Image (tube, rainbow, N blue to C red):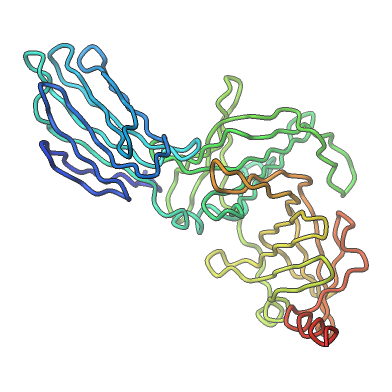
Length: 374
């Protein structure tokens, strides 16, 4: 089976003063008095480095520390044999660089490295076309929506599903980890929800469980990707999601008429056609400072309306540690129906926040404000 995210770039590491530039870090490695030393430039001093050794009975870590603007690791020989040592870099919870060196100890002296590797996370945009969008299980019991986090380098996942006795919702911000070749999370929230006959989604309230960790892992191929969800807890089971079909195409003239940035007093809505995914999307900012995102919609020809379902209503809270926004989900499975007439946009939404709100094209709204100012 072809691995969808094969990202490993193997390189040979030689010794004594060799400098290799990877990302923005200069790597120097050398053998000195029988020990193997790694020096990595770290002008930012982010303390995201971690040193490891595969077999401490052969090679041990004497010290690993940030000295001024350089991360320095010294590996000492313990017993004769072959092993591998590793230096990783983490941004937040995700590993974004991995260096390895294959070492041989003879006569309790480390010899020249015989090989090694370097793995690094690519530009996050590399994953967008495959990752972002709607996913579903084969039995139809769960759906998943993945959107780009407002910070631009990670993603937000929302799952809505049903079991034999109740419904559930799950949300998490996911980060690509190049060592695991998976999208990891550590602040997942899970809600148990009652199953009712109402068409309105139940209010989420406080999560049943918070602080969950786990991963989403790709398999399959580029044409038919599969994304497997597995929590880290012992009772967690694997759930496989396949990319959902985009659905019936929205007519081009309808896309052209609705696609724009729209504004109202305290509100904004951007509607556009995502060429990579072949679907119409919408992102809204509400007057209370919260947001709504919708991925994919249907066109109701009878009412001449765009119908968005499965939206996520959330607050975006900036996280200084990750330099991204943590998504605090307020409501899931939000529905919004947009109608356009005479250059005005109205919306009926399941949250009830847009009742009576009339949007204008942003250019028209700005021109009206300028006229009123004069």
